[in-house]
Length: 236
Image (cartoon, rainbow, N blue to C red; front, side, top):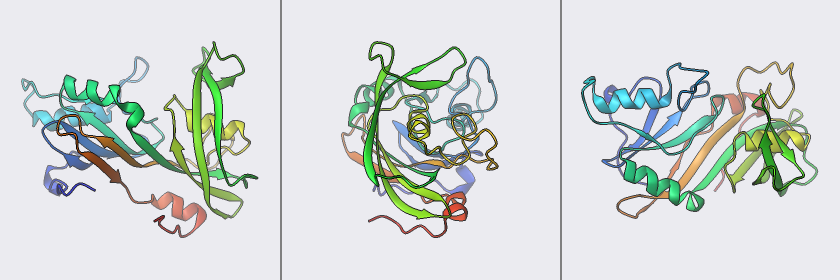
């Protein structure tokens, strides 16, 4: 874990929590409900705009800017990496296969196999819904490794190791397996009474784009998860 201290609270941008920052990158924890970046259909405030304002320190003429390396769904909370230069962004994206990403999620039901890897070819239709296709030429190979950590109240807590990073991959794979993510009204239960998606990008490990150090960041367990399934023991 990096030794660099988190910036003082008074310097924290409103809307995201900075976990680490240097001259090349900034690592933040995004809350559920906040877009990573704007889309043609949605121009609301995003993690990207919040951080652009932060690095410009109120000066709209500043040349400082933030570059998007990867995304999390609006409903997903957790760790995001942003770059402060085009070169740093390109390095991180070009070495993305070496980045280790682990998530926590709570799903409905009890999985028969407590560990495993879900593999399928994912594609997207005109309604922006992602699904698995049997045709390798029509989709992108997607692999999701999971392990059950706890079962209670008809729910299962899983740790996810994301082996590929496709749009809505975890949500689609678990839904198609018959265990949709709690709070997922798109791929799960349409009448799901939970307004928060139980999917959290818990940890990330990657190589720094300039100094070559291996950096690892981990967040706490969201309170929503504890309310759903009870006390969660930290994994060693």
